[in-house]
Image (cartoon, rainbow, N blue to C red; front, top):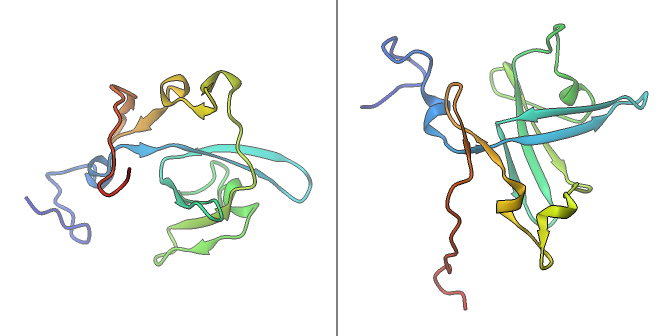
Length: 139
């Protein structure tokens, strides 16, 4: 079936877009405002977009629980989305916190991180089987 995002089918409610883009990583975005107040918020519309320099992007959809923009957006530079219903924010990563127990032989262990992925609707997933694969053309 074809689902039009511009003319949604009422038989598929809620909109299945997010359920088709899975798994989505959950990014914990931390910010500090001008007064020094710290904020930590999860975003499932999140991804790494560059290694050099290290950069991420996230989209803040909806409003703050008290109205207006979400704290993570008002505290940093942001770019408006086309329809002004959310914000896409890109930022350079200055550092990352890694639990000491997640490092094995000088590498971050995905198994020890035990990440949770966002699926569609109210569904989440834990990491399953981990395997290695060599990319074509790499030794």
